[in-house]
Amino acid sequence: MIHLIAFVCLLFFWSTSYKMMVKQGIQSEISFAILSMTHWLIAFIYFQTIVSFQLDKDVEQKLFGNELTLIQLWFHVLTCSYFTFDLVARFFKKQLGQWLLIHHSFTLLFILIAILYQFSGSENIYVLRYATFCNVPMNMKTILAKKGMQKSDPYHICNLLYATIYSINFIYFLPQLMIQFYQSDTSMLTFFMLSLLCAQAHYTIVKIHYPSSRSSLTFFYNKYIQQVY
Image (cartoon, rainbow, N blue to C red; front, top):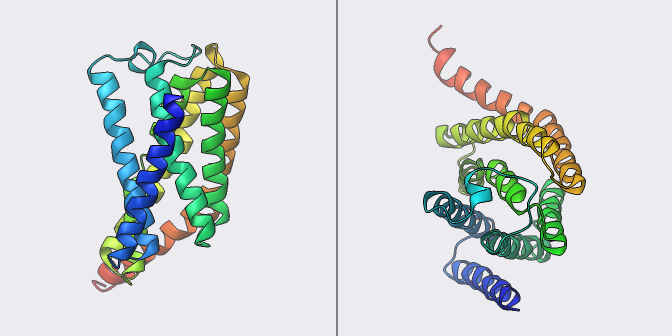
């Protein structure tokens, strides 16, 4: 019951924070980006606290296949509250694109599976950790775009960082996790969900990140290199 109350309170926190920013004249898309980075920072601090103070052996030692612990459950409550808010709020604001819908849906399914079946808590924490490493450049790119800076150096730097980190995560780190899941007692349901997430990510890399990276590299080439010759 206390976890449900915490979930509702966190939903209230996210929605109130969003409304306050919009009332201050901050654009809706920028407000969403700021809250996304805020959630990432809180989740990152939470993870580092678990590891630094040895609060959870499974997370600290990267052990998979065990039951969901209380520490892991609180991490899931935090993440579930943010993604639920972001999904619903963006839907009503008509800012929920197809890519974001798929990404958020997969994330919430990971969390719900862990909570309902009481397993894969450590697995989910590591999936979320690697999958969100690109959060800051992703959101900074959005903020710069909304400020009309699509032709600036910072925008294209953020775009390249976003594409690079995203690609490394889903081509290297998360497939490594899949191998570790397969070799442990991880539920096949969690393994299957990660497989779907990686498949969706590889499609995104080819269809979105590769063309956008090429565009940014062309921008820097035309601006700095071509002029030399």
